[in-house]
Amino acid sequence: MELLVRRAMRGEADAFIELMEQTKPALLRVAYGYFKADADVADAIGETILNAWEHIGELRKPAYFKTWLTRILINNCNRLLREARRVQPMDELPEPAGVWDSTESNLEFKELIESLPENDRMIFVLHYGEGFTTKEISRTLDIRENTVKSRLRRGRERLRNELLQTI
Amino acid sequence: MKKYGYAPEQLREQLSCTLEEPEVVTMKMKEAYEEIRADENGRNKKRNGRYRQLAGVAAAAAAVAVIAVTPVMAKGIGKAWDAVTAAIFGADGKVQEMHESTGLSQTFETPQGSADAEKNHSEKTDVKTSLPSQTIDGMTVSLKQVLTDGYMLYLSVDVEAPEGIKIDESNVFDRMELLEDGKPCEFGGTYGINACFVEDEYAVSDNHRAYKVVCNADKGIQLDGKRLTLELTDFLIDRGKQEFETAIAGTWALEWDMSAAYRGKTVTIDLKGGKCGAHATLKSVDITPLSYSLYYDYDGTNMELFNDSLWVEFVTKDGRVINERGNQDSLIIGNGGVTGKNQEDELYCSRESFAKILDLDEIAGVRIDGVMYPVK
Image 1 (cartoon, rainbow over the protein chains, first blue to last red):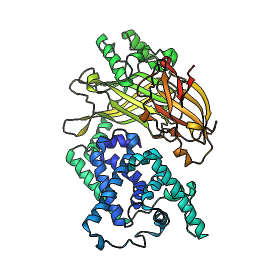
Image 2 (image 1 turned 180 degrees about the vertical axis):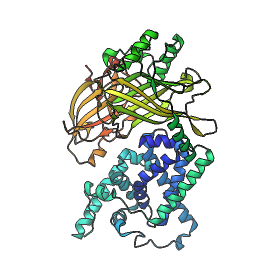
Image 3 (image 1 turned 90 degrees about the vertical axis):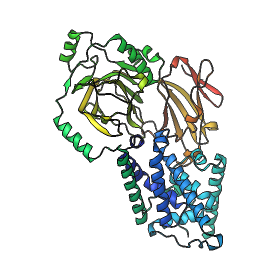
Image 4 (image 1 turned 135 degrees about the horizontal axis):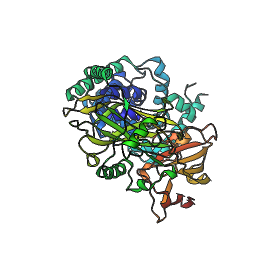
């Protein structure tokens, strides 16, 4: 992948698009950690692709590409969420959808996400879904590494307790 | 009963699954790609269909490659090569002190005259001491030096274009391949093979510059004794309008018998727990002038692997710590530097390259959590 990144950094669209296709599964998982609606996921990913193309020449080290791209996506997701809240008055915000706006096969993933507290979702997605270290997560989300570790621990305990309650 | 579990393995399986891509996402990505292609065309950076057609035509018409021997180089150029090599390998002249006897480097001799040239040309099978060199349409590409420590492979390539063709830092060869005994050499993993022309300050002249090729393998590569071939195809230049064109088509094939073979120094550690993390046992550290490798056993789960961290310091005899802290925050699963479990000794390996060539005689040892393990 590093060779593709280097070619993309030189402005080769083919290489950049191939990179996006290779990282698309990760982009989907991260975006669905923020949004339920497919359209919102699409907007976030679309903007991320364009932002990344515009700034890839500034990437310092090709090995950091995945964390760099993830950071862009997370920033876009947060921005879209803020914009949605700003545009609509609080009392007019739609009720959170009870059912995910997506295909059946994605439901298991999304049910798990739904069961996690909002603050913990991205930590779990990045750690267990994308293989980020706690250090990388702390940098990507701008939170202390100890906070990442404790949230992972408490999140697992919460899931365990919920599971035991259903038995 | 809910479908998900809470154990790390279950969480990983569920959160790393491949999600089905909704049509709206596909369409949005496609729109973005179209915009990118339009932007690239607008910037005139694209190697477009027109270029590919040109390359095809040019390749078909390319002259038959001839193994040529580069004539004797002037002393001035020789001096420039010292600086170029230093630029390529980050050594302050120290690389010149590394003799072939150490196995770290292999330098190809420049023929001293026509007699040597004829001898080298006739003894094509013995390329060990001959300068691997090839000229196509007036462009001469020669392999000057090889550095390897068994994990990293650096190739210093001299490129001299015909008069009138200027070589810039942004120029490239369209394709590059390293063959081992005629078959593609596998540099898999994160890094593969990368190359670039050196900066302007190290250019010999407008049409004469070094090309640095770096090969990085996830696992140790033992190439000594092998017949290697570096193939560089189609020299591309930027005409000044952000448009890449094939300036000279063809494949330069540089062939040599690899004699460089370096074995690093091994420091036995055998440290479990503590700063290694609850589940890791750091067995040993290999250090070479180019890179270091950490070998460890791990008895935790795959996901706990991510949480453990170890700070290993490489300390000089005058007490300096040479490795930058930011380059190694975690022993395990760093920035793509960890291999899987080796089937033979069942150890994991984490490897990083140094920013410049080290003089191992200056290294006192490896320090972990305040305890020094000397390099002998």
